[in-house]
Amino acid sequence: MPGDTQPFAPQASESVRLQVTSSSGISTFSRGDELVEPQRTGSLACTADRLAHLPAGFYAGVAVVLVAVGSLSLSPLWRAMFHLWATDPLRSIGAVFPLVACVGVLAAWHRLGWRMNGTAWSLPLVALSILLARSLSVFVVEYDGLRLINFGTALFLYASGAVLLFGGPRLLRASIAPLCLLLLINPVPSAFNSVVDLPLQYLSASTARAFARLIGLQPTGVQLRMMFAPDFGMFIAPGCNGVRGSITLGYLALIFGYVRRLRPRMLVLTSLGALLLGYAFNLLRLSVLVVYYRIGMRFPSIQKHGAGVDYTIGCTLFLFAAMGLGLIICSLEPSTAAGMRRLMPRPTAEMPGLLLQARYTGYAAALRALCFLALTLVSIVPEVRSAAWLHASQHTPQPNEQEVLGSFPASVGPYRLTRTWAEHGSNGVIALAMAEYSTSPDTGDKASRITFGLWVGSAHHLVADSKFIQGILAQWTGSFDASARQALPVRFVTSFYDDGISRQYDAEATCSEAGCSGSRRTAIHQGFFFAAPGLAHLAFTPLGNTLPILLRREWPDSDPAPSADLRAQFEADVRIFMEQIDLRPLMAQDGSQF
Image (cartoon, rainbow, N blue to C red; front, side, top):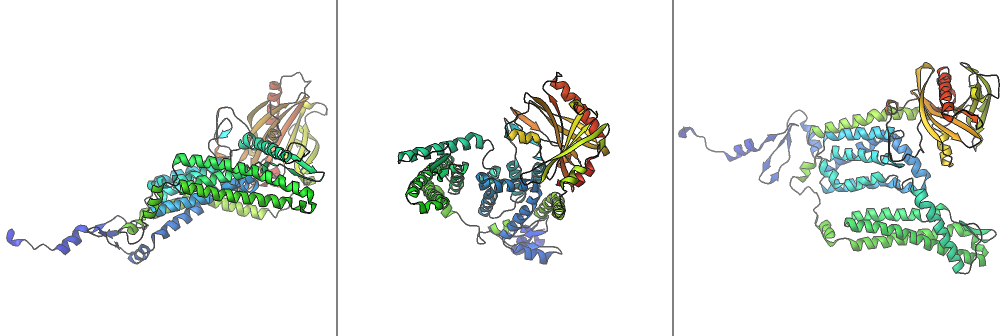
């Protein structure tokens, strides 16, 4: 009734209407356009209040630490890439790309106010990257020898999944360019050496030789070696062709141009120009070096400083090239981009509501972080155990030659041991132990013999890969399955060679406690090629030794039997041989740490 109506109380009404309690236990209040600090309800009020007043960047820092620790689950990837960066100067620049990508993502996140609008749907992406990192040695997707899925792909998927998990789709869109750098952690394709590197080496040598003649010198020697005196000259090595400097300048222009917000077309042109500039400056370096050698012929006392002078000239020219390139990029920067960067507001506490939205205010983000940590720990823990076992096993003395040769069984089924021998590496240490088995007392009957080899101290080795690098191509390649004692599965990769004098058939595999398998690392396939890993490669890293094995048979070319029949008979004999041999004792004694 009208007489019973209570007077309207604005304060009470505002309190009732504007209090909204979220599912995470946070109550928010808004007055007009102002967003007020939340009030935590429940038993965790004190802890929540303390966490709520931490700066927004703190939670972003926690996320970065989690992602860095989680990347240990990609340890096979890191081992392969660290080895590449440490042993190949041309590709060593790829080592800085993960750091540059991390800085780029953090800069984009800072511009967004450290907002954590992640999604748990990115966890399958992280899981896929871990599986790829563990199986890329046998998981092959390539076209005409070019790997379409490589370690860069796995790292890109991992980083993209982490960005989606903590920052959400908006952060992924803002940081997609820095993340694409991860696809280039191997910055130079493998085909680059033969297609570009070697031709540039000869072109550099021709240029230096022509300049030497221009200033009155007549160097002798082969194309790549220029001798100005019997004991004073220069060698145009692969590192002298300017490729390293050109690649470095190209990537510097690409990264710096992106930071200065160059337009895409201008960014591509600038990067290509930097490549050409680096090579032009290298030709200038060689010309200046030839002048130094001309002076050195008149003043012999400075001849011993040739290497230092070369480094000084190269570093000086590279410094000037980088500085000039930076000035050019700054002059090409769009004026609108520079103005936007000066006027862009920084995310501070004075901006209403921005700091509050950036805070770690819900259980959902914590749950996503815990799921991410659990997913990566599943792969990290076995890797840590394997690393600890490897460290402890390094103090175990390596077996000597007599022990290795004595480990061959005297008989394997119908086959009897006839002789053993060893092949050694350049350091004099045994590398390959060989044993010959035969079913016939006639030592001249090659069709009844099998040569059994053990690669000592090597986790993976294929004769087929070594011959391929030497330019010896197999007339036929294939694979077949066998089984060793104790039901140990074996899958051999095979290579058949015919040099016109004899025919040789090799069957190779790398054995571990899970079984034996082989995969060629240097095979070139025409067109599109796909090879998927087995379950053994997706399992965790085993704790044990690995032992590459080789079985071989040779026939003289005078043997009238067709090669296909000889291969089939050899495969049948190998299956019988493997059924009677126990590989596990050989792995324990002669194998190397995984």
